[in-house]
Image (cartoon, rainbow, N blue to C red):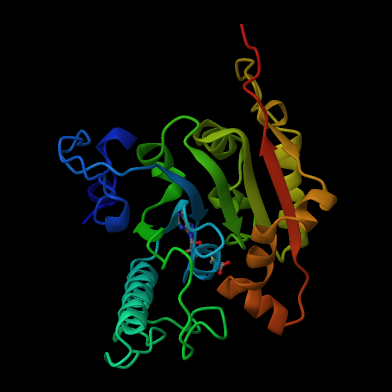
Length: 287
Ligand code: SAM
């Protein structure tokens, strides 16, 4: 398979129905451009480079009516996460059945790692998620994962102003200067993020690498244009930084800081975590 086989021709061709069966529109006449059934709502939240999915699993009950997708380039990691989500959904279904009929079958442990994956990820993030009979809002029906290289294909999946939140958690740092072009924050990628984010939407970043944090601030708040480029709106026209006071009230920040697998590793190693969140401004006037 090549990358193209995973990418829809355009967002209108993307068939989300198998990802979000609980949200398929009952009207069978509503289909997308590839003939798949439409959903009752659009995907709104994306986790770029989601890894083992701690962010998605942590956010799912917080935003039970919001459809969210994690995007990940590594096949084995993606397979692990898909199995994890299916296991969580099945567990929730069993709990609901059991609540309706208390003599029904025992719980299966949704933390079980599928055979053959190289995951070192821990069980789903919430300690009482497994082993106690807890039914979570949304039953994890609102999260999914897709294998894709977001540096190439984000606009194939999401239309203009479709997203309300984008997360970039602990991106690979690519320390050496000659590798900086592989970073998933850059002037050109930021304009893609601005394209798919709606005005007022938020782009969340967190890293344990202080230099990368400054790179992020520079690229979102100053927006350098390549020499000789035609004048055009840059990141500084499109994003503003969200204040600490506002972030203190945002539960998504806590999930980002403590529930992704990488954030847990940084906590264990007593490392620093640098958070920066940007609000998509209104589209600038441009002649
Ligand atoms: N966000 C997760 C967390 O906080 O636990 C994972 C962080 S890990 C350091 C970075 C992840 O980004 C890896 O899983 C990597 O495979 C993924 N990644 C890197 N480049 C990517 C790309 N272009 N598209 C999608 N995923 C990518």
